[in-house]
Image (cartoon, rainbow, N blue to C red; front, side, top):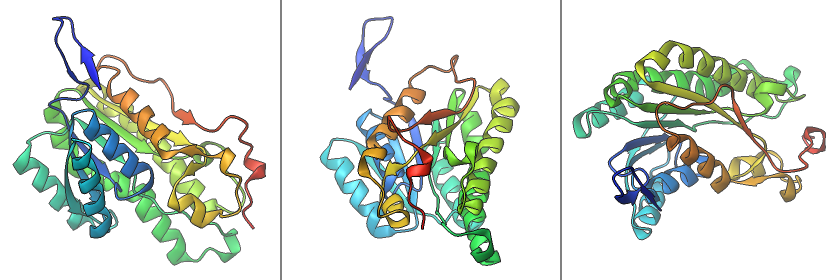
Length: 256
């Protein structure tokens, strides 16, 4: 994948850029890490599972990309700070941050325990805050950084039996809107990407009876993130980006 600039030269779209994909061991994060690496970025992938991280690195190498990995649990601030310290020592800046780490919970409110609620909030919402907060100085050092926070369409619309997840993703959207205003003058673009159902392990674990035709491939979301990364620092979205399958109807998703 190449580009041509005004001087007539060409090269990988993201050559020389440093990216971090949080929650990059599988699903949307994995697809995004591979896509950004294939486009020439130096990608740091963080996730809880060492085996998943190793598999992503091997696949990226086979495709000619460059990925380094670090075990991170976004519910533990110390591990997030360790990631920031590593990036600070190795690269000194961060051009692209993609926050993909998340957990889903399908349960009526009456069956949602406080521990369940805290896990969903700590992973999806607080984890996003911790990562942006810890990496902010590196994003500032870029001079033209992009932050993509993976939210969900359900964070815009709500849905029965996913109150904790919907609330967390609505929080990610609100956080992204606030940060877009707060950091925009520092040339840091912040976008909330709100997918509908995506073909990922988390999706099928949550709704195994769902019609596959109502999902989009994780690679499609990765393509959308690459699009955002190559728009240029002087262009951004005025609202959330929603990506979903043609014909998707939330009422058709079996949650029982």
